[in-house]
Each structure stands twice: as C-alpha cells, then as structure tokens.
Amino acid sequence: MAEQREYKSKNDAVNGHWADLKEVGGGLWHFRFMLWVACHLPLFMVELVTAVGSFFFWLGAAPVRARSRIYLDHLSKASGKKMGLFGTYKHIYSFALSMMEKLLGWRGAIKLNRIEKQNDDLEMFLDQLNRGQGAFMLCSHLGNMEMLRSLTAYDGFMTKRKFEVFPVIDFSVTSKFNGLLRELNPGLMDHIVDANGIGIESAVWMKEQVSAGNLVVIAGDRTSANSRNRTIATEFLGEPANFPEGTFSLAGILNEPVYFVFVVRKSDFNIRSTYELHVMRAKTSLQCPRKERPERMKALLREYTSILEKLCKEHPYQWYNFYNFWERIEN
Image 1 (spheres, one colour):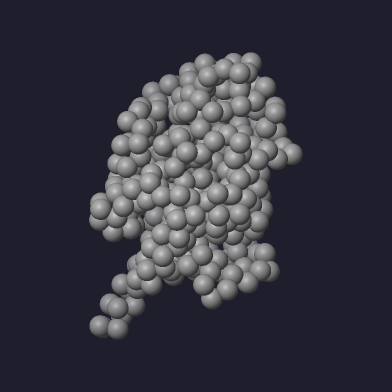
Image 2: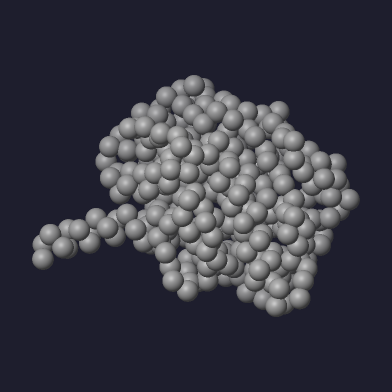
C-alpha cells in the first residue's frame, strides 16, 4: 500500500491539469530579486544570474523536470532531434529568460529594432490596423507574447495609428509574478479580460473592441481551467492532444479576421537576441452555417497546430507548457 501511495503521489506530480499546479519559483523575495536583476544589471549579467538560478531550481524541481521531459520526448520523436541529457535544464533556463524578458519589456528596455519581420502576412495585418479594422489573434505559450504587448503599451509598434490590445488571460496561478508586472506598469490589468469570466456580455464587449480597431488576443494551446471537458482533440507532435474548444468557438462568435501570432527569440538562450515576429492570417473562415461550424473549428485548429509544431521544432526550448500536454481528458 505504501508503495502504491508513493507511486500515485509521483504520478499526480507529473500529470494533472495545468490549473491545479502551484506557482513555482519560491517566495515573493525570489521574484523581487528577479526584478532587481532585470532593472539594474547589464544583459550579459542577467543571463548569467538567470543561468545559475535556473540550475539550482532544476536540481530541486523533479516534477518540473519530469513534465519538461514529456514534451521534449514528444518533440524528439516528431523532429528526429536528440534533446540531450541536459535538455530539461535548457528548457527551464529558457523559460526563466522569458520571465526576465517580460520584466525588461514592461520597463521599456526592449525596443522595436529588436523585432525581425518574416515573409508572412504582417504587412496585410498592419494595413488592416491602419484602416481602423481590428482582429482576433491566436497566440500560444511559445516564445513571449508579453514582450509584443509591452511594445504597444510604450507606443513602439509599426502602425500609423494607436490601438489597444486586450489579452484574454487566466492569471490565477501566477499571482506573485503578475504582482511584479503591475509594479512596473500599474495599468497592466486595465486591458486584461479574465479567461474565467467570459460570457455573453464579455463576448459582445470584445466584438465591439475589435470593431473599433483593437485587438483581442488569446492563447490556443492551453485548455480552460473552468471548462476542462470542453476540448477539441487533434494530433500534435505525433500524438493526439486536447486544445481549448472555447478559444476556437470565440473566434466564430466574434466573426472577425483571425490571425496567428508568435514572437520567439531568434537565439534560444540569448536575451540580447533579436526576436522573430510571425504573423499569419488564418485561411479557414468561420463565417458559415451553424452545422458546418464544428468542422471549420477543427480546420482552424489544424492550421494553428501545424504552425505551432513547426516553430516548436525550430525553437524547441521556447514552448512553456510545463504539464503533461498529452494527458487525455475524455469529453
């Protein structure tokens, strides 16, 4: 019986819904130290301190290592690339760098000249914004979308007119780190839509914001904390995985142009690196009869996952879903 309880404890530490996992990283003073490092040290020292801190965290965080290994094993099989003995450390270090990037971005230390355009639909997107038309944007936990949002907050984007960004986020499990972001930018929470409180009224409000030329942004690679069984399954990195039905339903409800957007460091472990900005307009339209909507949503999801999978293979350590993404939730 003792052995069974020990096995169950270890298994629960690896599996389970992401919303049930506690915020990691130590006490509040750890996060305040991160803020001090980001605000006062040169970038090469930020990298060094982050690398050392990540190493000691990696040593003591066996469940996080195990969850990272699940992702890296899937990626290795799908790409044919070996992640190596210290792959989980690199994954955790890359995530810690992304947290530093968020702090740097919200204090205005990351400038527009660090953004590298790709051969995609960015110009179409910018033209749409300049004409006063907003969009619904699907992002992910790949790279650092916060960095792009911080640029818009500091009026550093590429458009001829100002617009607002309204991210749909569940902040319930990252309260300590979000407190630091609020200190850097007290208006941070003014534009955030609580993912746990979306209903008819908030959907109508979001549609009004997009119609007014603004952006509504939501991640498509993390299932809902409150509607865990509302999922759509599709293959991702070689195995079926669940994605949030609500996110793709919202795209249909808003009935606005849909874009996929990703921002990743060109060099996985260099915080001084330029950033690749990927913007692609969805080919799948959700303007269709209701009975066709489920198949159209699946097609939109497959578009999204094909891009996400490609970028994960190119930047294997920059996808930050530290839970068993392939654990099945039956509908």
